[in-house]
Image (cartoon, rainbow, N blue to C red):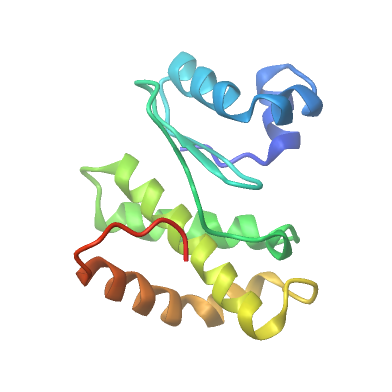
Amino acid sequence: MLTPHPGEMSRLAGITIKAVQADRLNVARSFAREHRLVLVLKGNRTIVALPDGTAWVNPTGNPGMATGGTGDILTGMAAGVMGQMPNNIPLAAVAAVYLHGLAGDVAAETMGEHSLVATDLLAALPEAFRRAAHWAKESTTRIGG
C-alpha cells in the first residue's frame, strides 16, 4: 500500500501536481491498476484505489488535517488495521482512511480546524471508534458524519 499526498503522487506518476489534482480519481485508479497495489491518495476526499480499478472516495476529514504528521498517523493506523485484517487489505485500507478522517473531524469539533496538530487525532481516536461502532449498529447506511 502506498499513501502519497498530491506532491508525492505527481513524482510517482511523472505528472504535475496540477494534473494530479485535476483528475485525482483517475490518476489514483490508473496508478493502482498499473502497479497492482492499493493506493491511498491523500487530500480533500482521500481516495483508496485498488488494483482492479475499484475506488472509494472518503467522506471524512477536514482541511485542518493538512498539517505535518497526519499522514504518519494514517500510516500507523493502516498498519494496525491491516495487521488485524491480513486477508482483506483493501477493506483494511478503507477502514483506516475512514477512521483517520473521522478522528480528524472529532478533533476539529473540540480544537477547531486551524489549530489541529497530528497528535490531536490520536486523542480523538477513541471517540471516532465509538461513533463508528455506534453507526455500524444502525440499520441505515451513513455517509460521512
